[in-house]
Length: 568
Image 1: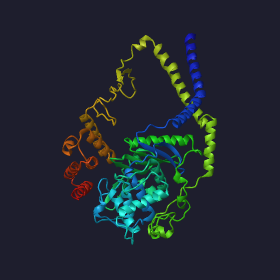
Image 2: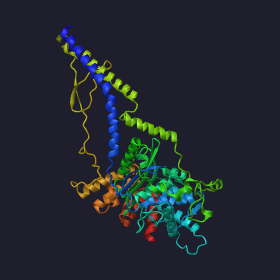
Image 3: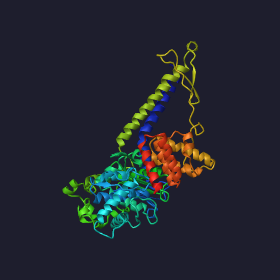
Image 4: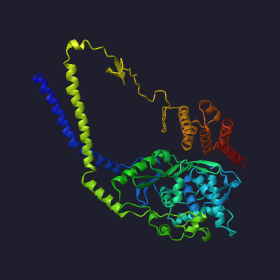
């Protein structure tokens, strides 16, 4: 081998070794700087959300990690049912059967109840919290309030009495910006709450084991009523385990979410949020990043409800605060064995803080801050070393084995090589290498990247001044039908409502000509039409659905309920 060629190879190998050494030495430093930089950026950059009001708190400490107009009084929509479920768990017997009356069928979102049937309180709580059944909330409120006012001639309206019970409990919990008028949360003048108060109420509710069990279920089978949770965060966000959705014309989209990751649990509340799922996801991601960077913060603001003496009975196994007759108090505090056997739920206090784990977390946080954010340094060195060896091996093969052989192969041998076909991969030309198993190389098709103009429907939620109202309507219709076939009725209804606003109205016959509608699509479209006060159009939609899909029980129930509502 000539000396210049040997020196060239040695120089290439020396350069590769030097690059490897630099990579091993500096990679952990860059990794640590990146981790520290990400933590600082997460801590210094709160998310931009569309919600009119929001708050993010840690459970059970109650530490406030984010707030936006959290004390503004806004319609809470169906998140109101969190309070209705609390009163049901505190003072009801879970196995007691409640009868349904015609007055309970108030419309909008429903569990699918019909007048005259009976359901247990346990199943009614599921019907309230999963499909957000206004009918289930009415049955619970009427029966519990009737018991509370038994023997009192002044109690003539059990729903008004139940609203008094809700407001009394809100006052005992210190909810200063909350006033309830209904157990379900449909729009009513004077019915309001705030993001801060809803977070406080949710913090309180999460101390009930059955409440936790209910709100994390994606589906539930009540007698004669298959129930599906409207909270899509349970399937969208890893670690999500509750709590409640809400939607009205005045309140917009409302969502209370809880999620647990790495031993931390968070509660996020967004009210009047056009992008409720995106906002909730951004808040939770921000919160978990905050907790990773700063597990404890003694000076942070905490919810007032975590310090109020009026809830000491919850934490110290005392008696329930005065609200209902003592004979009804089946769930306050930690219920006795006899109460649990009778069906009353027991309240479980927040788990005690592990002092050793807390100290270990503080020490770990201190070490991280002193080391500049470089956890697991040996592992970082090992990974960097493996990466460097891989790069060195690739460079050695490239410099030592491939290039000299091709560059210095005699012309007599090159002329004997068969012609290699040229392939196109991603717009670039590439020479195919023959394999010993095949007579010739396999051709690779030319890949074309997908673009917005590639034929698929344009998906966007934000207004686009370049699109006509008809085009906007078509986009939202296509998205609504797609979501319906995925079983996401709440999001489908939201898209149908946007299409309604763009077109001014929707005819189910015209929509069905363009799109293939399933039962979820018919229900979502009718709900959107009801929300837009197009009652006759909603009736036509459900009628069309029952004719096309006569075996879909939910369509038949919704159609009968709407007819009774229109005849009333």
